[in-house]
Amino acid sequence: MPLGIANGFSPPEDPRDTAGVGPDRLLKTYGLAAQIDWDLDDNLKLTSLSSYRAVDHTIITNNDGLPSRYSNATQIDDGRQFSLEIRLLGDFDKLQLIVGGYYFHEKAEAVLEVNMSGFIFGLDMEAIFGVPPETWIQGYWAGGDVKTDATALFGQASYELSPGLKLTVGGRYSHEKKTVDEQAQFDFTRVYDPNNPIIPFGTQMDSDTASSFDPKIALEYKFSDNVFAYASWSKGFKSGGYNVGGLQAPFRPEEITDYELGIKTDLLDNRLRINLSGFWYDYKDLQVSVIRNTALLTENAATAELKGIELEFAAAPSPQLRLSGSFSYLDGKYKNYITENPTRPGEPAQNLAGNRLSYSPRYIADGEIAYTVPVGDDDLTLSTRAKYSSKVYFTQFNNDRMSEDGQVVVDAFLDYEFNDAGLKIGAFVKNLFDEQYFVTALEGPFWIGFPRDVVYNPPRTFGIEVRKTF
Image 1 (cartoon, one colour):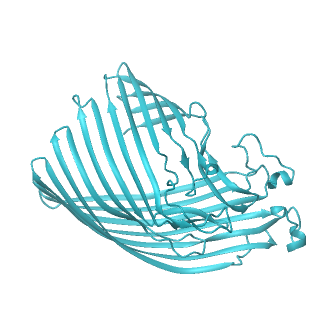
Image 2: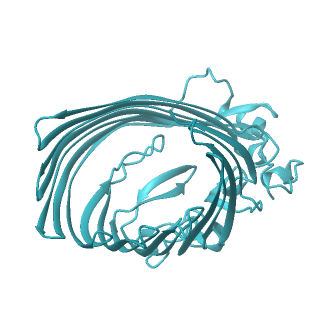
Image 3: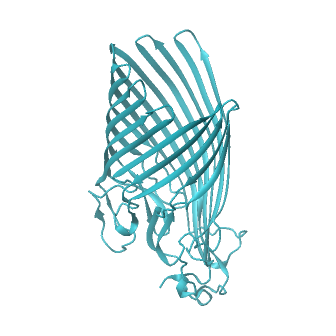
């Protein structure tokens, strides 16, 4: 029996009205960025790009999914980062060069605190732990700091082999080190007090390094000023890291080999643009999310692949009417991934080879129509946009309970632009027909009375925007 029903609560009919507290969110971001360009001569240019960014984020949510207050979750994510890139660009008629270096430093803090009522799990907390009923207990706490230092050297050369034919060769060597200091707590014996010191259930101090060389080769052919085709092969990697508070070994970097072929066109005096591309991504150590015990962790799948075709178009049948849209076909699947299903404890590990990648719909399509009416020196534009996405699975185990069928979402916009003043005033309605669907879902073992936690899309939303260009 669900926890809320067992203790006198019935789930409300509106799935968006289930929070006994919050969600309350506080987000502060600020930063600085600087770019310095130095023309060394007619062929060489030196550029420096540097930035500093800070983020402070706190969110408080209801963790039991009911209009009760059995369990609340507070998540804190704070970070400070600095980056510097220096690059030298050279342009020598048929040859274009770029070489440079990159440095990145970040210190990030993450904390997840889940405090609980004495009613949690329907257990007699007073008899078991000596905690009075209808009081809060310390519950679960996990967090720590992660420091990242990364450096890279890169270079690329493009050479015109013959009129219209260009060859590009490049590469990037990256090295990074991550250091973690983390701890976790399961405390069912003390009444909740934010000033209580942590009693660690476990701690970990660790560091991990990774290096990667990622080459690229591309060939382009320009049939005319308005049509060119390309083919490319490249490799890349996504940083590994730590599940802060999870007290786990680090997950490995994700590696990808990318094959791509495409054609881009501008036709009918640039009134029609059509781009078509096909690609094949071959993954090694693909990073995936899974709930283990009480924690959402990132781990590595063995191998996976994603093949697809993308079509984009933009057309201007008249000066007032604009059309645009895109279509994608995606075939993403795991090739070899042996893991246990956390919702089926006791079952042996299984190979998910052939399962579709999570969050990877097979079909995606969108389209937009905009019509502009001149009003004196100004413009009034009415536009609408629709997007279709086919069925998607939210976990790598591909069960229908953790999926969402295809849906269409329509937005509408009305903008009035004062051209001489650089001012635009607009009104919008997003999710015009108030469609309701899952955008994400988690599934794990028994936790606070239910094994599934979902997030719905935003409801129909109205708004006004004002933009000023200086």
